[in-house]
Image (cartoon, rainbow, N blue to C red; front, side, top):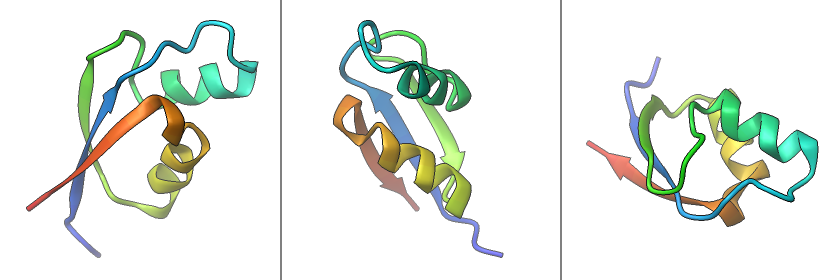
Length: 62
């Protein structure tokens, strides 16, 4: 199992987006611009990030 982590920062609002995109942001633990969360880089999380990548900034952590 990989122990890689990523830091995800919301850079754009989810307001006015499709309901699935809003739900994905909430699932990632994001709800405000500039809020950041650190999550493991699992296929599930990376798939969610890919769905709303236009609203996020993603950084790899050591």
